[in-house]
Image 1 (cartoon, rainbow, N blue to C red):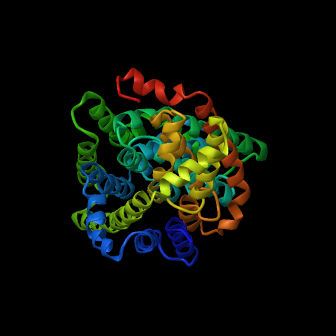
Image 2 (cartoon, helix red, strand yellow):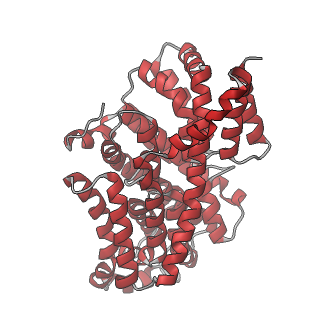
Length: 440
């Protein structure tokens, strides 16, 4: 059996056995080195793990994770919900619209789907339940809407993509993700509103429905003032990037500092003890992410030295002469992977294989990165392993199986948005080109 096959079978076997992704990658890489190179080459393990994480742009990942946690705990989501409710007023599907909008705005602060889902679910689920929405529907809608966080800048997934794919401008990726992220949110909103109207959820006479929303509508000015710090966060981050005031990595530092100021002095829902606990929580989450990236370096180095990725890329290219057919097959494969793995693992595992395919068919790397992110976003709320959905069902105290039907509805909706971006690449590329960024 070839060393390539040994390495791939070892990786698949370890995943099936329940070994964490990080260790599966590291051990599979070591298996490939032993099978195809030399036991003496195991001495490179330390160097490869260090080189994988010794990259300046990676500093942004733990900082944006910390930003999401700070905004989640500082009452920002609640203020955004109140403002959105006051603006939208009483109508069928009003709270569904609020949930989608707040998830998209929160995504512009955290860059993380699960963090976004947790923050919005804790605020929105009680209100939606009182207004007549079934918990499975509400939990699924919030999980699906929170998945737009990996599209709307700043995005942890796009940061990693810019590192894995050489020559891609992170600012161009951030700009390219904005319109597809909004399009994905609108695509989710259409079935949500139609279903809400069909079943009469949030109709007049319900607690939390028209009467309560009518009271909130009279307080638009007040709720807007309370929401200003939250609304200003994406403006600060994106405006600073556009103006050249700071780099994407520096933007993460600015976002953390701004979140601390808001939590301590504006909303005053954070104390120094809370902040210390958030630092620890962010360190734990970041440690898991960095461990995956570090041990994936062993897998990547072994796959490169053995020619595994080249062989797989050549096999994929040989499947069809049509770039369209292969793009569809790749999107389906990434969607399946997104149902089982997190975004970071998918990028680290699949990009060494997909980069040669992308170059062979001359696909734009920025556009291709957005398509991958949209696919991974769909996977975040598609069972069996749906990280966002696991968060929201836990908050709602329901079983994951109860959400499958609603999840399929929103999968179809977001897949339609993905299809539009695939057919019309300018949806993603127009903004970065207009802003003068290099889109390849």
